[in-house]
Picture 1 (spheres, one colour):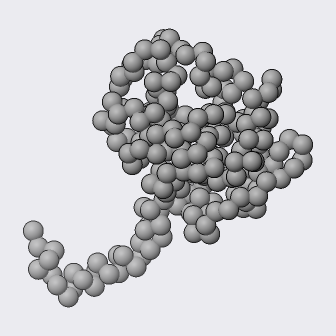
Picture 2: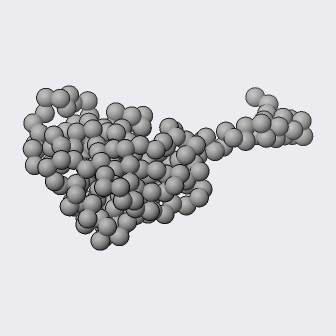
Length: 213
């Protein structure tokens, strides 16, 4: 998992509540568990006018020009604004995979579904919870003629606006540590690889019958 670095990114405003994981990545794309390649099918049913299937060449598909990700202002967006209860529905981990593969690093919303929220941290995404009042202001700025850019600093837990203002946000210390150091569950385990090897060697001596073929 890539470490989370301070960056300035374009904001895409998805002004919808209760966006579920089937909308984020529809069920027909769940056959693969490679964790990559899902970006072209992020919000598939909203981005395109036809039905997407695994393996399709998305470059030739008809686009829904009314959908936010197809707006030229938001090309290359790395920050997604959303409304309440983002990521509800099934617990599919493909949802954060698709968001990350598209290029998003941060999702800002008033609330998230719990499992999706946890899955984001495990896949290098930073979900930020802000009040509805602040979200309304960000949406207003993000839907102007020019795209809004936000500077995200996880170390100081701040969001920098173009006018110089700063918005603070909360994140748990353990999750912050993992993101800053690029540690998923496997990475955390591998930090103790020497202790694991020592245990296995000692176990093989004390119970050799467990290791016979």
